[in-house]
Image 1 (tube, one colour):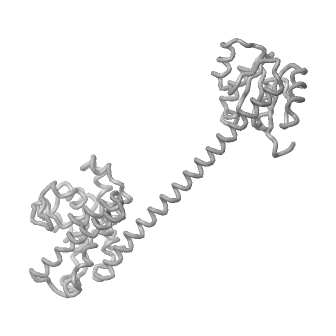
Image 2 (tube, one colour):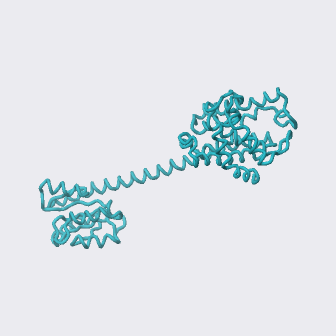
Image 3 (cartoon, one colour):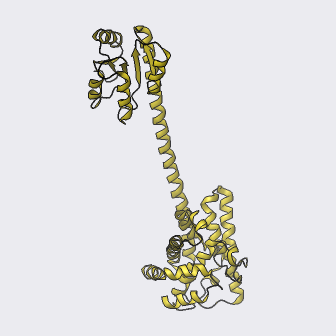
Amino acid sequence: MDTDRKIIFLVDDDMTNLTVGRNTLDQYYDVLTINSGARLLKILEKNIPDLILLDVEMPEMNGYEAIKLLKDKKETADIPVIFLTAKSDHKSELDGLSLGAIDYITKPFSPPLLLKRIEVHLLVESQKHELMDFNNNLLDMVEAKTKTVVELQNALLKTMAELVEYRDDVTGGHIERTQRYLNVLVNALQNERVYEKEVSSWNLELLLQSAQLHDVGKIVIKDDILLKAGKLSDEEFEQIKVHATFGEKVIEKIIQNTGEQDFLEYAKILTASHHEKWDGSGYPYGLKGETIPLLGRLMAIADVYDALVSERPYKKAFSHEEAVNIILEGKGIHFDPLLVDSFLSVADQFEEISKKI
């Protein structure tokens, strides 16, 4: 058979009809004549045509029974079927179309008309497959583009976070550790169903990526304050506080310039609110209780724990047990009481992270 030509199965129990049909079609198509519905189904196990011309009135298995079996199998369900029949009543035609046939041609048929209708239906099928291929390719293109955008977003977050760590080198590893602490805390909230409605609405992957930027505002703090080997004065501490609002403004500016609201919204919240305290004594806005965004309340615990167990120029590292006790003492003062309870349930995981990184 010519591989460039369409393949048509002609199914009829009448030898004369098969001969006439073949003579009509074989100039344009590769035609296989089949004398029963049962034989058609057997051949279809190994060969799939482009179109089937199926007689309705056949012994043992009629065309209606055959098409039902065709449509029930995934491998043959999409093969276009045209019924050939001597019946010309509307009910028979409607029955055939209802079973999945694409056309209904009465016998004896006009060869030119049969050829034209086959041509039209094969063209429609070809265009349908082209459209499906286009849609599949378009989907692949969209997925590839989406992956590229996500990779660029993650690269931007990582690069900005690294800029902070390069300046504030005494806190090396702080960003990665706080990311992991935050992940542990969010998992605890999910397991315990604490603040369930809000937590379930978060995109955890994007949230954890955004957590890298919680200290991005430190890029505006002078080196002699940021890297001071000793306790900060009150005036210097006021300068440190600026990093929360400056970081928020930096992220707002990126949002305005890129239109990527969803991408950076988590980062904006984390940056601006992780130094707020439950009793309202935190900064930069003095928010109190649940007016502090939940993300900020979570990051406060992760951030403080890491600061406590890490050595700094102005202090030695606290032990894990000491850090846990300090956070427990801050329950309802510095920290959300519910979140402290969740922290205590996973504190051992915090210790593992602090030792590994």
